[in-house]
Length: 124
Image (tube, rainbow, N blue to C red; front, side, top):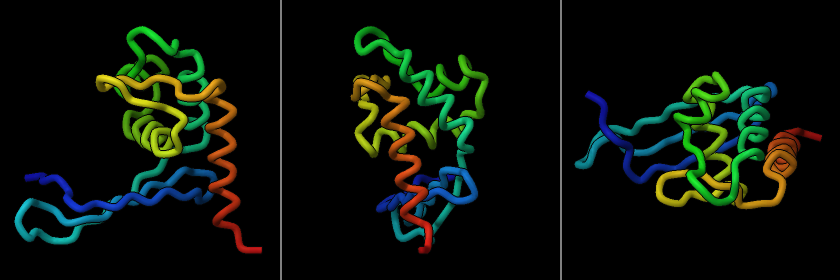
């Protein structure tokens, strides 16, 4: 049986051209075990999500993980990772469980954040 992770922390970084998300926390409500999982989103998928979001109107129905994954024929989990990163960076905002552009050029801002994160991890 799967349980939700409480007191979770999320870390993003870029490794081998992929956006990596690590989620860590405690499984279950009452003193469960520590749980950590790692997920990856390829740069091509990240770019496709950013490009699709750039086409999303600021008003109207917005979009969602399901809609983006179906529309762009992309893996659901990778779309989710990309969206979570863009939400954290303030590039996408959520209203009524739908995603809307929060900046003028989602694609440009998304790529700036992706490459800045990639540079952070490099050892000089």
